[in-house]
Amino acid sequence: DVKVTQSSRYLVKRTGEKVFLECVQDMDHENMFWYRQDPGLGLRLIYFSYDVKMKEKGDIPEGYSVSREKKERFSLILESASTNQTSMYLCASSWTGGNYGYTFGSGTRLTVV
Amino acid sequence: AQKITQTQPGMFVQEKEAVTLDCTYDTSDPSYGLFWYKQPSSGEMIFLIYQGSYDQQNATEGRYSLNFQKARKSANLVISASQLGDSAMYFCALQRAGSYQLTFGKGTKLSVIP
Image 1 (tube, each protein chain N blue to C red):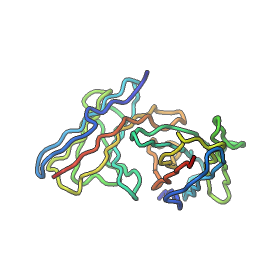
Image 2: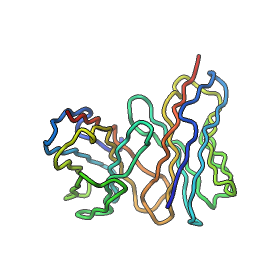
Image 3: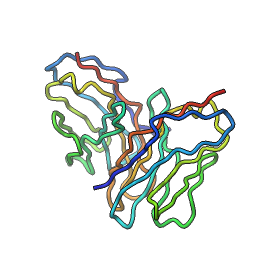
């Protein structure tokens, strides 16, 4: 069964910590995405990647960075976690071409205290 | 800029009844795609249905159909014969042709009543 796997379902981190959220897909998809989801705001795009070592800023990149050293893995990095980064983080991947949108991971609920 | 509007934060429907979830969009691109996703309480986003801007017929997938009105820029999701398992958040999303990004609406929480 093809899928997108996020390494942690729940995380609790302290303010100022460096946080890594990992995402791995086994579908050989070229494109990978990180969104955050907040009540009443829907999903907002943080960063995306079309290829290995390539990244593009989304709508809300401030306070985040990403890494894509291998095609199957896309990491989201919170350089210095803050309480306003408490959120649900969703990773997704897609093919280049085709009209079938994304395959999503199960999400990581991050709490920064 | 693209925008997706879902005006119903929450809705209730009786089991076995049909329900329509509203979605309007704003884009100046002639070619685009529209998606609906379901998010149960478990959190995973599940793809439901897709409509291309040039598709002549409204998309259907089992109990899901998309009421696409291009001139009105609306892409409403219709769920027929609602089931308790349909209780979830539903998101409408827009994709420009040639872009791999999806722009999401804020979602509608559907509750199915026994």
